[in-house]
Image (tube, rainbow, N blue to C red):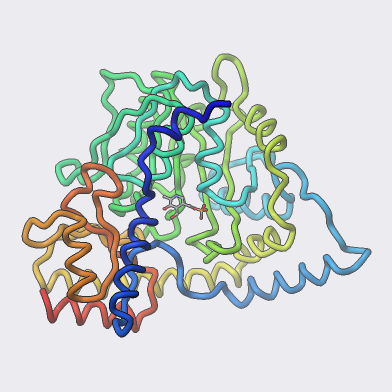
Length: 391
Ligand code: PLP
């Protein structure tokens, strides 16, 4: 019996685990300290009342012989897929129901999708970015090349037509930098992928935070994208479903490689290894896309974006450089040339604030720091006061 090679080479600590361990150690040593956590990107507001109501109704249905449901259909219930289809049609994107696959979230989808690709592929991963892409590519044995994202390119790397890549991860708006591609920029990636027959894995987990109408909300807004892209969406941040678990992937039927439809092999993989999202959760996701549900979820997004304003005003007043505005994160430059983990320790020790060191998202994240806007207003305000006082 042998252990997989990746298990012997992969870095031991997942970024958020290290942050959690350091924070735990600090609070054990300083039990009186009121720590404000602006680190992990989890939501803090409860899910909308309308969504809760739909969960209760769906739970009751499960207790009645006439309305009880067992296994969900492969790929999810039509009632939810129809709502998603409607969302896309409002943006002039037409989707068939069997191009939509309901899942338990974008994290699983973005790693599971690699099952349908050969391990010989070379993939491009932005640096910095959500660490899951790199870890899951390593687990799959893929060769990884990085796309440098930095201040010079506004944290939005564009394709280099002189090199061929097979799989390209795009996260827009990006976690952690918050940078989001315009439609013109995305067209360049789509043209590149069609030229080289690459596949774009487009993570739109933070799409609902986009404020600027010139930015791309779905890759399928771009002409030619259906022959080269797969899109991943999540209800985690748009509807507060981090603990409910629901997301979906869109694999267009036009998408083919080696004469094989990726839609059919993804469907085959999905139905073999996954038995569906609970009925109650799919009803809840459906409710979050209804008129009332959407309105309530948007209120939560506005609430978090108020935190963005508060933090950005504070950093402005301190003349600290930062980036963002279309995502629930503030991507700031560490003051006085501090390294990311050095600034983490400094903030924790002196201000009792926890954030996420930029270097944990890739080498280009060194000297940067991510502050999450998902906190409660009172905590964010207090954190801002502490920042003003000390820095
Ligand atoms: N994609 C990005 C860029 C994320 O930052 C996250 C979570 O923080 C996810 C996906 C995970 O989404 P889900 O909760 O749907 O698994």
